[in-house]
Image 1 (cartoon, rainbow, N blue to C red):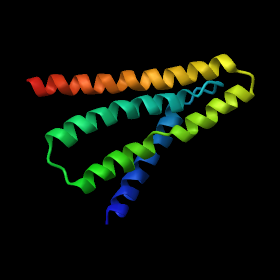
Image 2 (cartoon, rainbow, N blue to C red):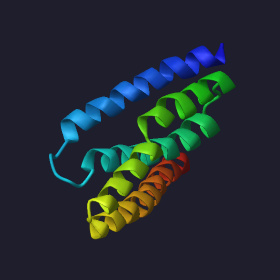
Image 3 (cartoon, rainbow, N blue to C red):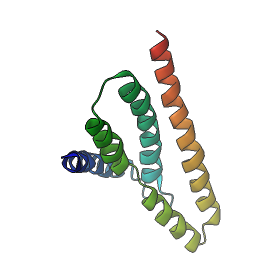
Length: 124
């Protein structure tokens, strides 16, 4: 049954990712939509792992469906990888390194913000 829940939640995450891609698409060479999606996903996963998992009593099935299914399908490392290689192959080395740096450090930063927000919530 967990496979069904992960699949359903994954479908929701994939549709949300597609919608972000539509609304954030910049038409530029730089992959803004994927960057924004992954930064939002880092933020949401941090909040999910602290608030929903540690403070609320959720079943393992729900935790897996949301964390792995929905947020996992919303974010995408494979697209980041392909877009980075395309930037390198297109001679846009600087943009490729900028994309990598923004993705890694931006994701860490957004995760930290998510954790910080939940720390303040828990302290009140």
